[in-house]
Image 1 (cartoon, rainbow, N blue to C red):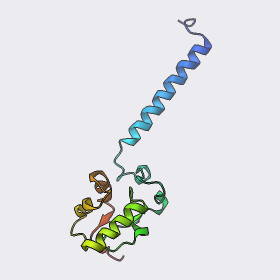
Image 2: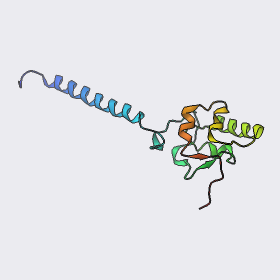
Image 3: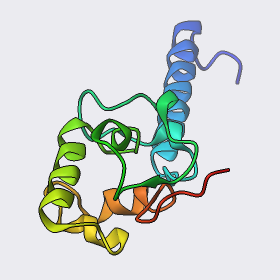
Image 4: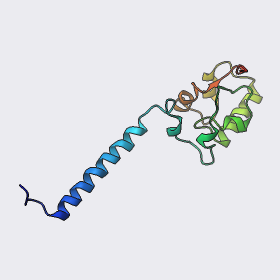
Length: 125
């Protein structure tokens, strides 16, 4: 069996196996719930705040500034301004589901926000 493949052929096969394994790992990481691993949460907009600025407690969407809202995953400057503008026109959100009425926020974004946002004032602690 030893003489079946040349050194170059073995090298190509090794490369293909490693590349396939790395690809499988990368695709697998994309399927992890971003709420569980915030570093993997994709940013929907260019210019969104880096993960290092992620909130440490729930963000009160009824009181947060546009800048504070950009710390949430999937909320860049444009969506943050849309949330603040909607809130100013229509009053505070009764539930987080009310964010679905804001242009640019869909069910996927809302689900990413649920563990990180609230409509109530966060408790001081």
